[in-house]
Amino acid sequence: MSVHLLVDFGSTYTKLTAVDIEAETIIGTARAMTTVKTDVLEGFNVALSKLENAHPDMGDITAISACSSAAGGLKMAAIGLVEELTAEAAKRACLGAGALVNHVYSHHLSKKEIKALKNAQIDIILLAGGTDGGNTECILHNAKKLSEADLGIPIIVAGNKDAADEIEDILSGSGTEYYIVDNVMPKLKKLSVKAAKDVIRQIFITKIIEAKGIKKAEEKTGEIIMPTPESVLMAAELLAKGYEDEEGYGELMVIDVGGATTDVHTIGEGYPKRAEVILKGLQEPFAKRTVEGDLGMRYSANALVSLVSPYEFKQYYKDADEDKIQASVKKRSDHVEYLPDSEEEEAFDEALARICCDFSMSRHVGTVEVVYTPLGNMYYQTGKDLTEIKYVIGTGGVLINHKDAKKILEEVNKKSNKKLELRPQAPTFLIDEMYILAAMGILSQKHPKLALKLMKRHLK
Amino acid sequence: MATVVIGVIGADVHAVGNKIIEHVLNEHGFNVVNVGVLSSQEDFINAAIETDAKAILVSSLYGHGEMDCKFMKENCVEAGLNHVKLYVGGNIVVGKQDFTAVEERFKKMGFDRVYPPGVNIEDAIEDLKTDLNLS
Ligand code: B12
Image (cartoon, rainbow over all chains, first blue to last red):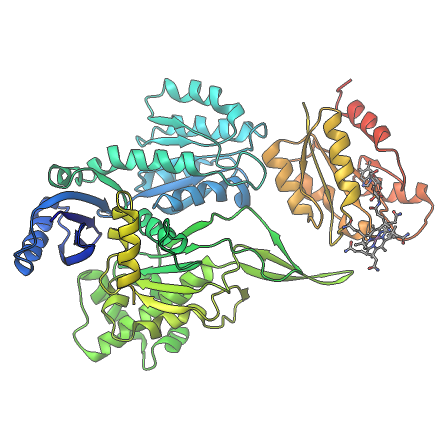
């Protein structure tokens, strides 16, 4: 019997999944609080003994692989020239690599922006700007400013290749760690993020893990191969596409409501579904991830509640009065491991989760805009049309532990009164009941077919 | 070689001339960035910024060019593209109008060159080379 142990060092919990490779089954899962502040291995060991106690005849662990979003995960800043073009392309590269991106800047970096970068706790900067052969002036300006600012974090340069040599001259003497890779937007509106994503992952594995005190875990777990959100995205892509003769589910969406963020992943082209709709804007990635740093159940509960007025909050939670809301929020942001201990608090969590689903969906899906022209109405689509998505899969603590999780997920296809949002219309809802999606993403690196089979068996 | 942005402005779908212009400019060694039909002013302008274009060639065939091109120059200036040459051509107004008056109106709007229907595109390219000091 050979057991492959999959480890996810999460922001709150360290989660283990043991897979029997020959029998093609999940032996069991276990979790314990993540312990980055002292020694990550403490939490890991607690979880491991839980797992071993529950499955005494589990057999020898022959392989371990891990991913991590502990200690704040991977935080990046994206910089480009035009907001809707290279700045957006840079942001998408970061998101696709599993990063949280709260700082996106376009055009010339100002002193104020540099200061914000200095004060923010960012792990890596991605600097883009200009198509190949296009504008070099802006990215050169920004490279100089960043070099002078001496932020002490790696800079990935993925902009106009015509500027590469000069940027090398600027950065090479500065002591800044830098990487020059292919342009994220080599041609107008053409997205090309693979090279940037690869180097982000490389830096994450070699440097970021170390800086956050998670590297130590590698003594036991072998290399931590990627940020957790990237493994979820990989799992989703595998589940959609299938592998060899094992069929996939087709276009799908994963929504991950966490303590700090809500992540939405969709796998699908998202092209307009009607002939009269015209597609606008930068090319969309086939596997698209967005992450909302202000939508989370615990760390971000404060930010979340400030997004809605008490009046709006009532749409999600009937008998809310303002003091009660504040008290419940405080309880959650002060004690991130808090679990609801009354029916009221359960209902409150449910309300938060609904808001996470509803708002993150608004920000993820494409929209259609009606333009009144001399020749009548025309329809312009920006972003992805996800109306025909077949499956919506819910994951993350609240959804998994909620008895009526599919009800919460229905927020996803609720009619929005804001604009013409292209949300899934009649998807089948599935729940990641065993909390294995991230684990299956890591497993898919070595055993894609098995990972696919296990997902198909256990997502219900 | 110099980069130029071309496209058809507004709700206009006439695609044939646009393809021909792309082809001929390429033949003359220009680096052509084609934003295609149904393009807004913003599409032209954003493309010109990222690609460092030296000129924008706007086409309008369906008769509503004057409306679609309003404030295009102002918007270019706003976006830092003061130096970028702005041309327009096709069937830029409704029906057959006295072209001298049409040209004057578009020049007033800030277009550097304005072309009548049926212009030989090769002639416009000669103008472009002159304006960009390429020959
Ligand atoms: C084919 C065609 C269509 C096709 C287009 C198919 C397609 N996807 O391309 C269809 C049937 C869709 C169509 C629709 C309409 N059309 Co139509 N169409 C034509 C037609 C017959 C030929 C256009 C063409 O392809 N010409 C060949 C190309 C090579 O020439 P070109 O487009 O003029 O471009 C050249 C020059 O103009 C110049 N040029 C163009 N832009 C620029 C820019 C610069 C800077 C320079 C230097 C030069 C330059 O160089 C190009 C290459 O040589 C013309 C009539 C005609 N004979 O021109 C009418 C015509 C353009 N259409 C016309 C109209 C009114 C319409 C409609 C509004 C009709 C309606 N009521 O529904 C719709 C509009 C649809 C829309 N949203 O755009 C009118 C426009 C009248 C006006 N400006 O006052 C025209 C002139 C017919 C007419 N005489 O009434 N049309």
